[in-house]
Image 1 (cartoon, rainbow, N blue to C red):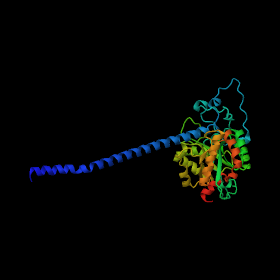
Image 2: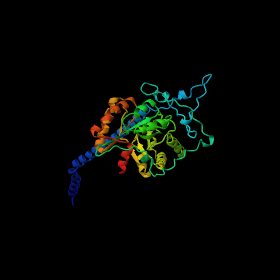
Image 3: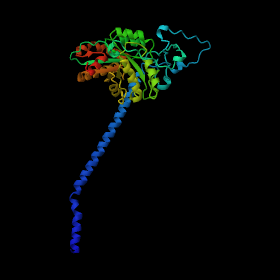
Image 4: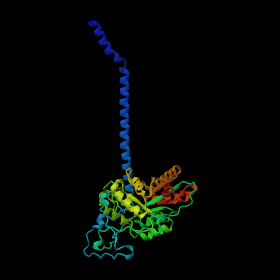
Length: 391
């Protein structure tokens, strides 16, 4: 083979791929462009989702602080006067000598800028001295109650009967943070029943007011303080915190569950950090399963492990669908109630959670009487739980 033939063959072999280069380059560029767009959309969605969840948790926990704040630190630690008055004698019927009322955690105006005495927020909470328990009992957890001899779990035994439902969509309205602001709590109990009313563990003298609420047809729950993400938010005394020993968590929870009777379960006050902690929530689920209670997740974080653990422990479970009063105006609450109606029509049931703010109470007072005419039925939370369990 001559040199000329060899040179021609080499040149043809180099030219052959050029017929495919424009197509291959275009395809490669398109794939790179699509990949970049996809990565950008995914990253943007992740950032927006995380930001949205943080903002929702922060807004809700900040809204909860508008109602239930323990006494300010400066009030509790005020210097004594030259001639201090002796503390008043505790009232025997209001304190169990084996269950001391805990001191409030640090918090107040210097920590978060919230003034509990500001207009519309209700008065500051007054704490009376607790009766000191015998030293040998101070570190012991409270015992769990004896099981019901009739065999019915507490969430069934204390459930408020539901109105006839038929094919109507159901709405349960839960009002949290009750008991601290007595005037507004009393106003809530006069609203049309059945509402589901969640009472703060550290509110004073809960038994009489919760009994009245139950006599008026409302269902009762315990609103348990749980650790939020933000350290500037003070959820109150005896809060359930990540990293506490199991026995201390159990002691705090049992103290909260000893404050009154006749409740069907618990829901979390704040808790955007604690409800995402599997170790701590294991203790909660174990305790409430033993007591036959249900768990209502306020859903202050999308990372809550409560749904999964409730299934594992066999704990009756529900979760809120709508927050009513991140904005506390009457018009804003009415807008959220309209969202609750829409959710109930679409899914057959809705759970809305609010607080005893003036705007919330006024909006509910106008909305509840007309609910039946719109084709809805107001039910306690236990009715929706039973529906989910197929009962």
